[in-house]
Image: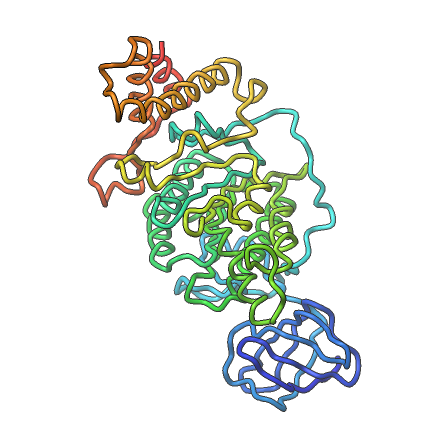
Length: 435
C-alpha cells in the first residue's frame, strides 16, 4: 500500500500526487476522511500524479487530504442475491430493501471480461418470438444476437423495450437484465412496477444509473450490469436477455467525463475514445459455449439525425436495427416503426425460412411503392392511378395498419387490451393482405 496527497480538485476530477509506487489505471484509492471517499484512477501523468474520478461526487474531499491505494479496482458482488433487486453502479440497493450480504460471496472486476470469454457460432439458430408483428416480421430476434431500437425523443423507445421485456421474458426460461443508463427516473419506476405486477421481477436483475446521477456513475452502470450477466452466463450456464436503455447515454456519460478531463474531442464533438468506449461494452455482450447473451438496446438519436457519429458507431455493433420515426408516431401508429429504414442481417432464408423471406421482399416492395405514390397522389389524386397502382397502394395502407398493435405495458394508459401475435399469425395475416 502506498500513500498520496490530494493536490487539486476540479469538480469530479481529483489530482493526487504519490511519492512511492503509483496506483494502476482503474484502481480504487481511498481518501482518509470521515466518509472514506473512493477515487477511481483514470490516468497517470509524469511526475507521479494520478488523475482520478470522484465516483460518488463527494464534496467533503479537500486539498491536502491523504489517500491510500487499495490494490483493487471496482469489484461488485456476483451472487443470486441480486436476482429481483434494483441496484446502482456499485451494487448498492436502491429498492428500499436490505443491503447485499457480501460475506463469502464472489466479486468480479467490472473492467475485466472473463478469461474464458470466447464466442461461438451456434449450429442451431433459435428465434425468440416477441409477439410484436412488425418486429417478428422485419427484425426477427435470434438468440445470442444484438438488436437496437433507434429513435429520437418521445417516439416510444422505452415503451417498446418494456413491451419486449414483458413478452420475451414471460415466455423464456432464462434470466433478464436491465441496465438503465442516463434515462428518466419515472421510466425506471414504471418498469419496476410493470415487472412486479407481471411477476417477472423474481427472474430479473436491474441496474440503474439515471440522469440525476453524476456521469461517472452513468458511465459505470452498464459495465456493472454486463459483469453480473457474464457471471450467470458462465457460472450458472444461463441464457441471458440483456436490455439496455439507453446506449447513447452511455456514450454521452463518457463524453461528459472526457470534457471535464479536457480531452480534445473527435468527430462530432464526442470523446476521442468513443470507439473503444462502445467496443468495451458491446464485445462483452457475447455468447460462449456455457450460455448466451441476447441484447436489446435503445439508442437515442439527437435531433433525429441518424447520421450522428455516436449513433453510427453503436449501429455497427448490431445485427438488427429497429428505427422509430417521428412522422409515423404523429400518425398515431404504435409502435412507430419506419418500415423502410428498419433492417436486419438476420432476415435471410437460412434463418427465417423461404416463406418468411419472400414475404418480406414483397412487403418491402409494396411499402417502397406506397412512398413513391404518395407524392403523385397529393398532386393528381388516387383516382387517377392505374388499377394496378391503386391495388398496390391499398395493400400497402392495409399493411401499415396491420403492423400497428396495442401494447400490454400501455393498458392502463390507453384502456386498450394488449395484443400478442405469434409469428405464424403474422405471416398468415400478411399473406391475406397481399395475395
